[in-house]
Image (cartoon, rainbow, N blue to C red):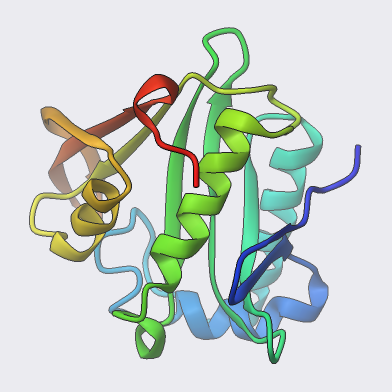
Length: 185
């Protein structure tokens, strides 16, 4: 099974490899990046190696996929995006994404996510074509919610205290996008 590489106007979305350890560490050791995540900021590069291996195992087991977001001009890794899990039988998946803060507000995350949503609804992925994509945010993560709404996700409600990490419960705001509602472009 070949990892699908995707292109946008400014980005290449490709498989994470051992060459990306230092950039993954830079990304996930940043407290601003992991503020709303269910992980603590990385403190050691070995955590980056384990994360890359975990993402590769998800792909190989057909339980998820994560792309590295790279600037097309320089091949610099600036974030990741993908489907943290998918349910082949239900034709649905849960999306996730992150980006280095120096690249926030430039439309990069929106561009990358739009491409993987297009691929999931209209292209080919190991999970087959999806019908529904879900995203969960912690209330207050306005930037993430803005991206989702811009791409046509609908706010579906809050699941009270359905997450637990960093020694506290978290409400999760659920967003959903259905293939028939998404306009391919």
